[in-house]
Image (cartoon, rainbow, N blue to C red):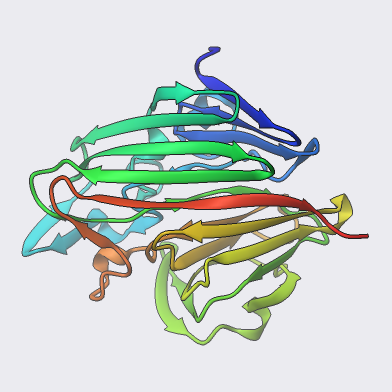
Length: 292
């Protein structure tokens, strides 16, 4: 058990890293949580209770009909959770190998070979605390014989308090259709436009945005705590999920591609990797004390 959960700390910032799902189980700044452990269908939750964040690899969100066409070939997959569609790729449901660890950094690896998906790949994840900043980075390498479309993302759960405010600038909003899939791009509705900091809507939200400027700010005035989320690499999209005003969490999910990008004519931001090629990217979470 001691090697299943790694405790990283540097100054006021601490996180718990699990090799199950390559996930984070907790994140605190000055003893205040900036991540919210929430029960999911991921592997870590079955072992330890809940995840606070998990990696999305080799893609994020859902693939409609569990199938896609690419380079003149048809690929099919099997559902990987109780959801009818393939959800969030493979990494969050897998046991990762701990490659190295120190007091403020852990490197984990996962290798996937086909099974119920067309993908074969190897991925390295680095979790590093540097001062008051937490960096999460992924590097996925295509080990299959054929080129395939790849994407990366992160699925953190954040506390939702009555005064939580979110600032996230994007160019376009996607409506949601049945199956929790993106429907059509439209101008961002005024009540869902977070260009300026504003509270989350009181109702269900599960929508993708694209044209992200790669920087987001979250504030929890009740706790005097703020958080900036910045992206490094081809992170052009994000998804916001929160069931309703009574929920104690919300998700802000940075992604390199749109949900169901496999079935979009444009590719939706997925990157074609030949055998041996890699896709890299990461995010930095930087907690701050709010003024006043």
